[in-house]
Each structure stands twice: as C-alpha cells, then as structure tokens.
Image 1: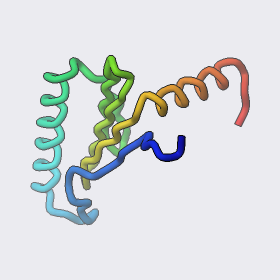
Image 2 (image 1 turned 180 degrees about the vertical axis):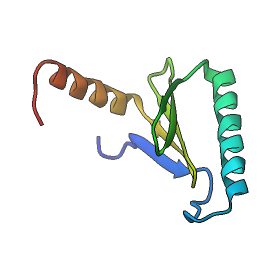
Image 3 (image 1 turned 90 degrees about the vertical axis):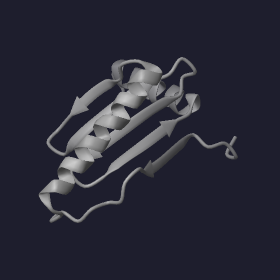
Image 4 (image 1 turned 90 degrees about the horizontal axis):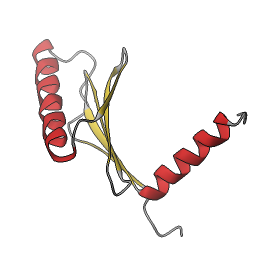
Length: 102
C-alpha cells in the first residue's frame, strides 16, 4: 500500500558548517549521549556502530519498529523504520546470504 509511511528521517540538531568552533563538537557529543541514554532507558541497550564519520545506535523494538540515532561532528539525526521496512531489509539480507548478487 503506497499510502503508508515506511520510514521517517529527521535531524535533531541544525547541520553545522565544517569549520564550527571546537566547543560545538563537545555540545553535540554531549547531546548525543543524552539521547542514547534516554533511549537505552526506554528500550534497553542499543547496538552501537562507529566509523571515522560518526556513530550510530540502533534499537529494534518488540513491535519490529527500529530507531537509529546517528551522530557526527556536525549534526544528530534519527531514522524510525516501520515493521514493513524491517521485513524488506531482512528479505534483502537473506537474498545476499543465499548468494544473490547486486
């Protein structure tokens, strides 16, 4: 059904310029940690992935909704995916696990 929303993505902070002052980086990291702590207290420990660009924390809820919080030096964003999107992601992973190609 095309009338349903499968994913919502929005910024929780303003996207900063790459030359933002160093103290802004500390504020964003502190706020990111506060968001992670709040979501951990609501949904349990999330899965954390780090890279040179930033960090992602993901919570897969019993309802099959997933929440992914992303943070970089310049912004914090969140993606909320419906169970239908999670079904699609899992089907895609099974395809590749069984030898499918891009």
